[in-house]
Length: 619
Image (tube, rainbow, N blue to C red; front, side):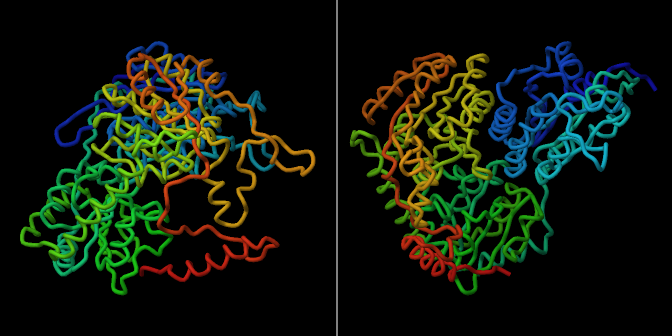
């Protein structure tokens, strides 16, 4: 057997460079490069290997969590058919990536993490930044990645790499089981040389197949659809990842079956398709909530049925409601006692479409759906209408950005009060235009995620909508966007704190406690003093962003026009009315204190118990 003498780090990069994926005859390199921050745990290993492989691009990030978010956003836009590696040093560099790993795994997005680790020889233990244990020497902080990784391995000997790397790829390319993969490599092992088989570094093409479910189950599902009177499709992220949007449009346009969309599934249909009822669940539209309540058959398409989607298990109230779940993941396909169709959404819909050639929903049901679509669009138009008050209303800001952006552009958001408003209001015009990280709703994702989206779709304008709370969590990747000449347009909405949780707190009777950015009041010993003097514009400018301030929507529109002419990352700062929001139409199960000295809390508890009675088990 021919061999090639390489360090473990060099062999790792050489292997990753030669991994390709192919779906529907389209082939591409799986890895677009590596994000990293180098330290003593990886500089002489992975860092050295990257230095001698300029054809595997290396991008310096500012925060390890941020770079994982960037990698995940890139993979999301690429429909999980291309990904990034993220490398860190040991200790704090590694553990900084854990939040990003959790977000990627929860959202089922592929990203490969290579954190450095303590010396395998243990000769110099405890090494700088090493966690010691009195019960074992076979542990490091990298073990913390295990519960948030879809695959985890530690390479203690060079030859282990030969069998580990194919397993890494198997999980990363799996449409059913992908997520964060952690390959922990001790710093001494990274630099150790070994005679690796040459064939290990040959080009390998991994086929991304389109699986079909059992034929008997498929026939039962088709029969259930034909016998339904009020069917409903709940479309999730799997619809978009499988490229099933066109066949979904064809199917529902002909049959009249209505569609509601989860956060990950928004964009499955354009907003103006007559069968699109818009946002599903807790942050749903009135039409989506009404139709879900009375549906006799719910067809889950690539959704994992989060509590937001199901309105905390109270959305579907028909006494004989049945479920059909089309999902590449067996785990999700069985949820709610459903008839499980385990497989690829696109080919399953194509097969269902063939067998529903003579099926249409009742005329009255179709007309009701189309009426609900139009009435909601009218409501959105009223919200979008330019009123130019100061401070601005968040719904107006969303409308200004949505109306100004082109159909091919991408809006990125993740946390706070923005996601719920965006879910209801954003008019989607392409399947990738609405980019919400809401599986983890991770504060700080927005700017880092916007960078990943831009790298994946360089011809699109990227509009990052972020509140002041998330901005303060993590804004450093503005620097990376400047470094890489990847322009973002960041719209920073300042509401002086955590508006979303403030509103939730108020609804639970707790008066927004602890959610404002205020000085401590010496008299009350509470954080209810004056507002903190945070200059967000100066902060963004200090990192290289071009900054524009707007005080109302008219000025915001002018700022958006100006931003489009700027060739590097631009931040538009605008203050918004914290207390004025887009109305909600459903409840969400957030536990309320059973006893309290506060009357408002006690009243909230009574409402909570009333809503709890609507929850159901779907068995």
